[in-house]
Length: 178
Image (cartoon, rainbow, N blue to C red; front, side, top):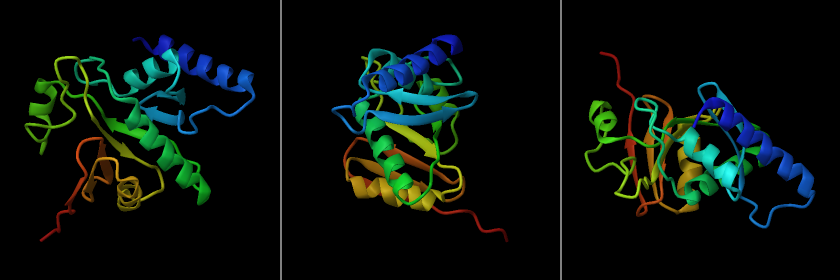
C-alpha cells in the first residue's frame, strides 16, 4: 500500500466517523496511530481502516504487509481511551509490527518464535509501541490490566510489546553504566 492510499483510507475513516454522527457499535474500533510520517485515525471495523492498520504494522525493512488481528488494534484503542481519561491525548506510535524471518533474524534480542512472525496466512499477533510523554512502564502496566495476551516491558528502549497470545509478562531492564 502506498502512502497516498493510507492517507485516503484515514480520511475515509474520519469522514465516515463524522458522517455517521452516532457512536460506533464497537467503542474500541477507533484508534489514533502513528508510524514514521504516517499518522491518523483508524477505524478498525471498516475495510479502509483495516487496510490502514495493516499498512502501519507492516515490516518496514521489506515493505511487506501482513494480517494483524483486529484485537491488537482494539487493545491499543482501549489503552488510548484510558490515557485520555487521565488527560493524556497521545498517539500510539508503532515501532514494530510484522517481521518477516529475515527482519526478525536481524533484530537484536528478537525471539526465534516471535509472535511478530507471520503464519502461513500472513497473520501475526504482536505489536511494539511507544506513547510520547508516557513511560513505557506505565503503558505496559496498562496493557497488562487488559489481560488479553502477553506484555513485554522494555526499560532500555521505552517501548512496550503487546500481543494476543497467552497471558504472560516479561521485563528487560535498562543497562546500568559501569
